[in-house]
Length: 258
Image (cartoon, rainbow, N blue to C red; front, side):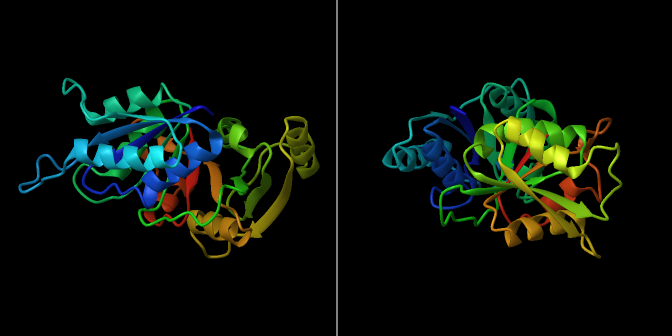
């Protein structure tokens, strides 16, 4: 992965935490170029004084201090909505990093749904107050044998290779289709350059999104990889799905693909 897009709302982005800090650290570890897309999402709110150019300068300064090459974009065409602007830029990069706050009429969460389902590229969502304590070292792969999970695994492969990884299955979430055994999953992944173990955890009475994150953190994972699911007609997260549960209570960085 050589090109990362960071979506940074001018009103909330900070270089020392959240999606911005994560993107800078990730770009540094991967020796990737970072594109900063900084916009004001509160332009319709009276009294909004967010300064996209100033925020972009601050983020760019932090990135360059970390040894990351970057470029900032603070202007965009208003002929299309910001949803489409973000998706268009995301298609040009290996991945997008952003937050998923539900604050405001035009929230990061709403924009995340758009870029996940319309860009064709993976997205890493990061908690607002996240502060990295170590480099990316261990990755949990949420696995349910679905097409979306397979896409997420493929998209995350450049991150997974060379790092400790574990396939995480939540027993009681759904019935796994097909007759392929667990050993085939591990053996095939190894041939693809992914050296991973397998953990199966009981869902219990937990929301599936809560269970995935809790078990990933218990396994000392720095990143959770999973497929994202949406309602194709309304282009929205299906209520009660793992994706919706993740966004409702994000506890760690999560890479999603659709």
